[in-house]
Length: 469
Image 1 (spheres, rainbow, N blue to C red):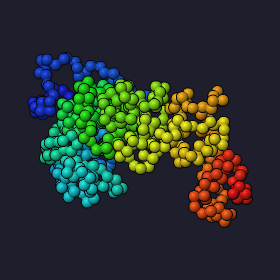
Image 2: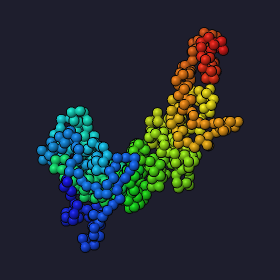
Image 3: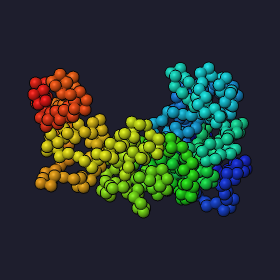
Image 4: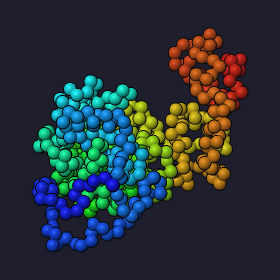
């Protein structure tokens, strides 16, 4: 077994450091006996590879990649204490595959750059230097640091501190575990492994301080809770709600990245959405996903059955965001998404209630022609839609089955039926040569010819189309 720090009775230095960060330490006489060895529920997550065990132990060794090990060894040889930290430690303890180990070191950033020939100062003001290995992969190396001051978005940090100081500034206990790749020792001063066992998201030290240092940590707590199906500690959740207005200070790009990452990693997207609504984050950044006065945050204009089907959608952040939002384009603009993503959202909002009847193939062709490149997005939404609310032909309600649409679309595509002006057997020059006046008349005639071809693709011959001119 690897050596674990602070497993038994903490020493005086440890107690002093913990007290500095707002934790109340009970004297030994008042501590509940047997707490460290009590049986806790197993970590279970049927949709992931989390280990199902009653007690989580530190493994003797972690599978540190050779390139990361070489960087650590070089720093240690130069006299700088170096540890592995970050999400890879947490994920490996959970039995999840993650080899993206970050390093934290006593070496100042300028020394890291001197020791390695190929580096990138990815966040040098905060002590982070990326070291490139022989395969051109970047490995982040960050100097031990602690925050001197912060405005909730940016921090001024101090270097030259200890590993303990560095772990104490981290967001949650499950992310404040360190492993020494050379000595195979562990440091877990904030009992992160116990919180992994208990399936718990808990702030390091005072939760209010942690969130006020960087309000994005509120959204990270929601993401980790949805990803691992962990509950959020009561005081951490309370602090998240109390500080939620601070999210308004964050840049749209950081919020968007956290929202999109949450969608991509959540076990159930519906839980992620519920957390954002419950904490109040949706009210600030995603107001389009909730109806006014609706505490459950049901999407605008969408039924309860649809919300329950949310987890059936592909993990496409733009698709899911557009599905949830009453006005997808406005939401994506607020999040400063790309123009392409905004247009995807706009098309979904425009067409998601206007599906064709699959029984009428010409109608499907006209629909494909109108929605263009966004047809696949609209088809992808079908498993989550409450199709009973879709408008149906008044004379044929019983036979309207929009679920058949994907098969009909696939058949149309396989037949390579013409769907656009570019697919027509004639062009504007042909029409002008046939006597159509140059200008708007050409476009109008082409649109009329396309309508005829969408009704019957066999009409798409030059001879027939010119005869119709």
